[in-house]
Amino acid sequence: MNAGLSKHIYLFLKVITSFCFRLYSRRFQVAGDKSFVPNNVATIFASNHQNALTDPLNIIYSLNRYRRPLFLARADVFKKNLVPIFNLFRMSPIYRTRDGVDVKEANDEVFETCIENLMRHDCIGIFPEGSHLGVNHVRPLKKGLARIVFAAAERSNFTLPILVIPVGLLYEDFFKFQKNCLINHTQGIKAENYYELYKENPSKALVDLTRDIRHGMMDASIHIELESLAPIVEAVRKVFAKNYQTPSEVKYGDMMAELQAGKKISARVHAWAETASPEEKEEILKQFQAYEQALENLNLRDKIVAERPATLLKQIGTFTFVVLTTPFFIFGYLFNIVPFHIVGTKLHTMFKDPHYTSSIRAIGSIPIFGIWYILICSIAGAIAQTPWGFLLTALLGMVTGIFSITWSGVLKKWSARKRMRTWKRKQDSRWNALLEQRNALLQWHEALPDAPIKVYSKSV
Image 1 (cartoon, rainbow, N blue to C red):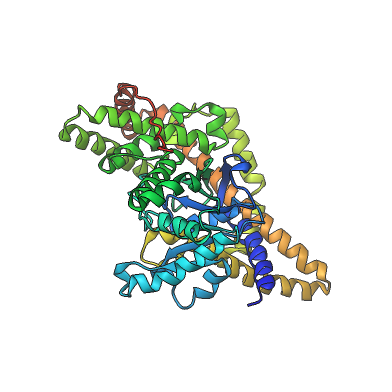
Image 2 (image 1 turned 90 degrees about the horizontal axis):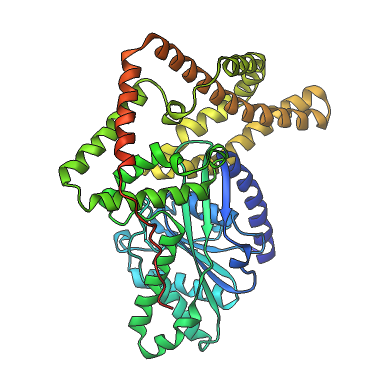
């Protein structure tokens, strides 16, 4: 494909899919000074890998339109019917031993492409952990990233400045719609600081650069040092992270505040674990799991349980809003019912790995909603015998479709608060047991030792 045409198609797809991803996420937050991501410097984005195809796409959308990173992704996801899409988004396969190929021969061509991109002062993206994992723990990195850096440096006779930017990704929820997402860019690591060491001792330079990149990724994300403690840390985060944030940060879903809360919780849990017995760790995890199960049995979320009880006047106001706007919900839901059903229940079955759920839903919604809207809006335009019929139908369908999702969430919250008021008034035994469970967990949480957030130092 012509390079100029490919660039324009890429930008067009970036705009369309960016719109879809922003609809999929309630808040899409990019952190880090824009000066961290220069336009005319060979740059490598090294990110933690949590959520399959969603990760590279979120990083792409966090950059300005002048940056078109070449991303390296696991070769096993390059299914024949998806290869053209990956090519349009500038994604190349990286092979592993488990892929059943000669890894060195297969990857040499990919590495050469990466080097050529850097020599043109372009950028690439890579997930040096090697595979995605839905846990906030930065695993030891592969050395392939450092090898690409020094290969490009050698090609330029060590005159090429290369900036490696560790990126931290954080998701409020990996699978659910309308949750928050953070892309945290750090100041970056100047590869030229390692050139002299590489000339003297290539092995040490590879180790040092790889280590410092990992440290940068740890600082940019929530890093749970002991992976065995991840279930406890995540359980505490889910219930008590808002205790570390201001009301406005909670209300507006500030993911940088969520990041700092997660780091603080991780530090405190690790400090507690130093003296806790295996039995104590197992017991507290069971208590959190029992509380989660109790919430599920009552169809509640902890956020609703922990908030200040809604006044009767507020409940009446919410109910009035729900009643008056029901026609808009019905229209929006019925207008979009077919793509809602396909995207919500069918697409994610294409992959066995559940972490592809959000990726497939967000990307797959583009052709599915596109085809559906063209079909329905064309009929409306033909009936109205004017192009305005097509455009107005499309606009009405999108606005009411988005509103129907919001309306459903408002109704669920109103219903949960109404049930809680009833249980509280009647002193329901299940409700009282739930509060006792939460209070016990709160007492344990408040007794955790204080501990500073660890900052991982750089050697250069």
